[in-house]
Image (cartoon, rainbow, N blue to C red):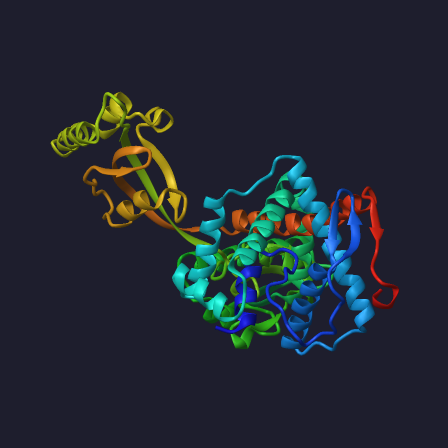
Amino acid sequence: MKKSYIRLAALALGLLLQPLSASTTTPAIPLDHIVAVVNEDVILRSELEQYLQAVVRQLRGQNTPMPEMSALVKQSLERLIVESLQLQRAKSTGLLVDDETLNRSIQGIARKNNMSLEQFRNALLADNMDYASFREDIRKEIIISRLRTRDVINRINVSQQEIDDYLLREKEQGTKDKLVKFSHILIGLPDAATPEQIQAARKKGEDVAKLLAEGADFAQTAIAYSDGQKSMDGGEYSFRPVTQVPPLFSKVIDELEPGETSELFRSPYGFHLLKLEAIKGDEKHIVAQTKLRHILIRTSELVSDENAKIRLEQLRTRIIGGDDFAVLARAHSEDTLSAKDDGMLGWIGSGDTVPEFEQVYLGLQTGELSQPFKTKYGWHIVQVMERRQHDDTQQFLRANAVNNIKKQKTTEELQTWLRKLRDEAYVEYKLDQRLR
């Protein structure tokens, strides 16, 4: 396993670069002494050297032009100072990472490298990496990650107005890229049309709309009745940016689903019918959902797994025999919220329930009642009521907006937080001038 690959695994936690091993590729810094005092902590020359070596390896691995060494030293030392300040704050507020948590994290890194923990440790040793130092580097990364989550990320809120404003900007931007294909029927009016002419055109348009509602082919109907420029092409307009569609048409099209025909509407030119044929650049987010109801029996010191299972088997037998599921759910289910609603859980999508529950209901046919099964909440029987493909686009877009706004705010708030830590700290440089 290459050193750089191990390094990338260690950085999976997403924090500041940490030094992992020695190298002879950068200029040596003289033997150890203090290069910076940071409040009550110090940074040693050896720490700076180790950090520099890791940075140089990464830059060379990415074929990034190497900056002046003096600038690289200064930047690296500043990173170590900021790291020290974060670790000091974590320690002062009692934020620690125990060995069990650390071991799980390192096991996760090993799995990402397709290795057992023992194989991963041996690979580190084979690359002359000290395993104890590696563990402490990962411990620091976890501590800093938790600190940032507690002090910054968890304090970020997103208002409904911010979500609405974000979606409006996205819609305006997306509209520029959206392409629409539509068909058009025009029942034309002359200039300065009389009331009689307007009434006659309206009546003709209503008759055409009725034909379409009864199943008439739009293209054939356009050829037969439309006064529009594209009538002989079945009224069809090929894909074009929605920004190039007349505003009156785009407003109507915005209310249509592909394949849907509009109501009759009027403009100065006459009466119109539009059919939206297709949209590009406006994908829907469709999710599979299942409507469920269930009965839950919890286990306790008085109710064993076996007793809970037997009770549900008896209830299941009664339901199959004709007893009302809703009545039994209200009387026996210990899920108090759903019991009030006849055991109904509503429409459930992937990931909305624990895996054991999802695995069972996905294996059922519509109307089928499960055997008793266990989750961490207790024992259940569940029945599938309906299944559907649900347009979750609006919920999906709002959730995506929240995530993106939080990311934007996190970047800004984190920089402000780090700057405040730095500004309030006592820092004394003791690095040789020739290396600064």
